[in-house]
Length: 448
Image 1 (cartoon, helix red, strand yellow):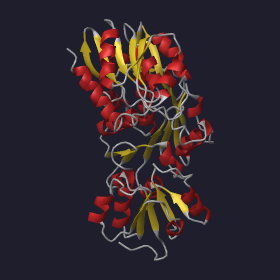
Image 2 (cartoon, rainbow, N blue to C red):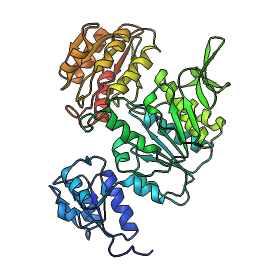
Image 3 (cartoon, one colour):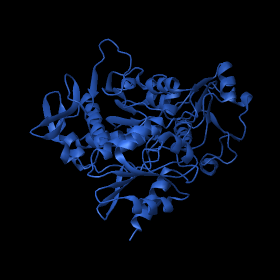
Image 4 (cartoon, one colour):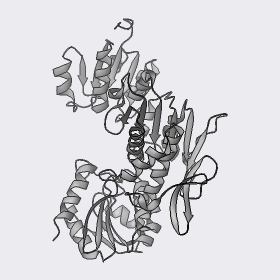
């Protein structure tokens, strides 16, 4: 393996999961590089020093002169490009890039690229399952699970990547075979100047894409048209040409492609209208990539959903409990409230609150009044949520998740569902959304 020219030098900025994948990639190809991180003790520092003791690493405040030794900086998704040291380096001619851009340069198999404010992990996993059922050697990862660079292999026939807006900020040309933005709603408003900036970051996924998949019911998901580029759509209404949707025959709803009935909705193990939309999105992506319907539908019938994403926890006194802790923004909570609320006999008792990341909660007011019996509020932004929700349903304030579960057990009636769908990040009270979901399930499971 030949070394690159001696005047080429890279710096990996950020030593987390993706940063470590960059280290492995660069080292395996004999590319000269160093590492920098704004934290004094980044998560992977011990691993770096053990496995790559020869690599220079700088921790703490970023040194612009040090950064300018590089031709290219590979910036962690967790670090905003607006960081002054990065902007100063860029002004002095240093290219700002990331792991997904590097992946795209080296991937030899087609890429299905999936982004969106919500549901991208579910759809990514589903498409990966569909490809595997179709007999493809498929590699699934990116923002979900395995970092993209760790997926690179000569025998891979298809890559399925979940991509965040932060990863796309540093991606110039992804050149995906099929790309989609499933939906767009306010998220990460503590990092972006507003929805337009967030929207622009998401839409970088379409650069160089050969085909696109669009959500008919979300205008913000639609990229600018490119002549000759196929566009497939999905939505919960009736489908027409190049479209996936729902059709009703003799009182039964079916997933459908154009005028072809594919399978009854009742055969899905995942509940709610939002999950029907996810199934249709996955079918559209797989179909665009050349997968046949039979294995895709088999994967759909077997799919039970992802942890902490509207995941069924237990049934008690004819009340079902659902963990949707991954709903860390308003759009995700809306999808769960409307999707599950329309799919049950009774009403929802909702647990919400946490770190709202600067979001506007106003959009929750009407669906909460329509579908919820009560809302139990906790966390840093509980009062902001209360003001947004108004007095249309009873609001109960609690201090702990255990207390929230006890209140829900008292409030819920037979036929209802208790839904943890916080519309907020978890870091004000928990290590991550996974811990929040696990403790919710534990507390619900402990009810007599």
